[in-house]
Image (cartoon, rainbow, N blue to C red; front, side, top):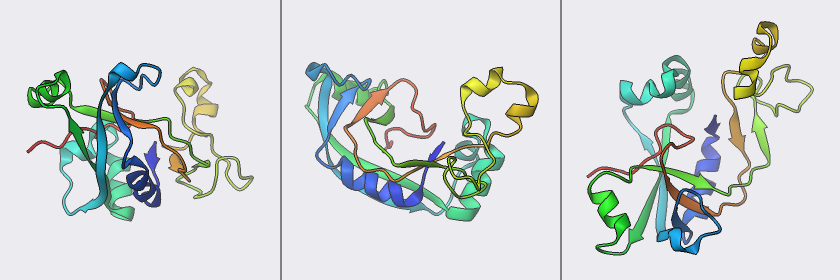
Amino acid sequence: GKWAVPDLYKLSDLLVGLPLTLDHDWDEVGKVVGRCFDSRVLQAKDVSSEILDKAGNYDWNKKIIKKEGHYQAIVDVFVERESAAEKGLRYGRLNEVSVGGFRITDFVCPLCEVSFTDDKCPHLMPSPWLEYADPETRKLAAPYYVRSGVYDLMELSFVTTPNCCNAGTVKA
């Protein structure tokens, strides 16, 4: 899946002031390691082949970037000096990030550009469960989905594997 470009701007606004946590563990206040204090959306001028080929989706990623450009939500965070989080960042143990507790209004089909629930869309939303479906059913799946209409967000987390395959810390 991917975020709709306008929703990246909304995510950017929603991130400011939110906690930076470990592993989306919302029930454990001890896993709050920092806070988001600024955020912005940037459009990249050049996109490397490494980014284009993330998750083996080179062809679709190239089509998306050709159509929309490559946008990134950049978030500035603070962590306590000499904390485990600061050391994890310094030594590269904490690299991947993910947003958690987001609420959206819809999933949009990238082929039809309408909701998957709209009668005009004959496609199925992609899902790991389709792997178990018959081949004819799998053919009905869209290549990806678009998250649309974000209106709430709870936190930013360090994770082992982000849902968006290029989400991570910015290296100086």
